[in-house]
Length: 224
Length: 414
Image 1 (cartoon, rainbow over the protein chains, first blue to last red):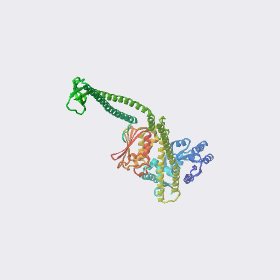
Image 2: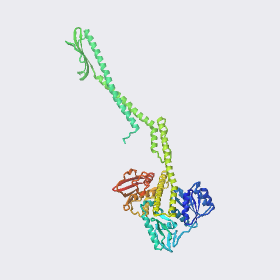
Image 3: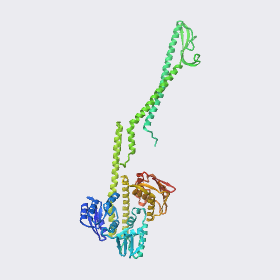
Image 4: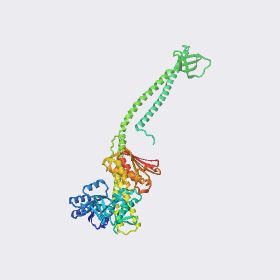
């Protein structure tokens, strides 16, 4: 996949690039409004990660250009502003998703993939990892064409794992992904073990042993 | 605090007291002065009568007495003159009357005479009383008149003051409107008005600046936080680190999460202040509560139960309703043990949430203050209940807290 990361904070931009490149994606960057406007009108991308507050202009204006040029690219807005109006404005202008700073790269990655999967932008509704196949439209997971019964959280967890395959996911990231702000209600993350273990058991029963423990308290979805 | 008296009442009261003292004092002085005057008059007339009697005796014109007015007696020895009051039966009036009496001893034409002259005092007493009463009446009437005149004049005079006071009472920091005060031709009031305007303006700008600052800080913090978070995400993926380092890094993630929460809550507070939640709709709070309880079950929090006798519907912003319930719940969850029941009760216009606690709060009145924490556990931001209070204030809901029978109880009346 080919991504454009339009973000004026170079450190953040480079971190995003580093994370996304691990899947073999091609990442181009734009560090200001002019660069971003130019790149979106000349080149084609599968997904554009667009900061609203670009140093010399608004990301929303870049979004207008994308829509005017009828570019077939998924757009995910990143913003420091958690306001609902900004969010609605961005989505009204045709953005596909909206994420507020600070965010986990794993979360951004899984949002990008979710946008791409919606089919419009060169993605596929079907996620495949070896013998695991997930139909994201019907929210069903198959192992060797056999449907496996997963709870809602287990399903979300599996999608999150496969989206971020090969990366270490800490319990904190998983908790935040699955429960958002509510995750800070819990003193410990025992409940995460419960969900992960259940998912792991269901996968292992079908021979899919991909959930590995990393560093004692993190997880990694990976082939041996 | 001691009991406060109204300004008009106070000035009227002192006016009345002064008036009363003046009436009494002037009446007393007038009484003694007139009495003295009358007495002198009587004595003068006594002396003049006596002189006439002496003159009459000297010329052998009279030798008779006319009791009680005049008595002439021949005596052997001369004594000193006596001036005194005496009570004598007056046959004409058929009663005892008070007389002023002058007794002198004189040697006239070689013989010793005792001459006694008297004058009735009764009439002078009546005159005295009449003077005092009319004085009293005149004073009283003029004071009553002056009192009403004064009060109404004072009311008029102080009108700008009271009007402006009323304006100040209605002054709200959160509204951006400047305070509307009325001008007065009284110098002090005019000065007061100017000072109040300057002060409120300053307070308002300071408040705005502070709000802006808070907003800016929380906003500006998000980008560096995003950078830290992104870098950490990459460190755990790109580098070979050991378990201990991983633990430390994930603990940094936890702290970032705390800052995120803090930021989010500050933003909510600022937005409520800025009146940015304006989509009021009818919210089915009982539904919302039951949904929340269900979603907490996924987090393995199963100790919450809702006891609804009636359905609770409230008009408010749906996002704020969500935050309100969320914050009340998370507060109860954070401060109770996993096994302890958290009870929610809703009626048609109230909501109660209670959880078991060992002891009452040390400072319950600070409970809704920003950054107040009863204990340091659970990484509380100290803003959850401040937000709850702010939301309640926004919609004029009445929130209260009490500790009863080992339960922390929060109630909201809608």
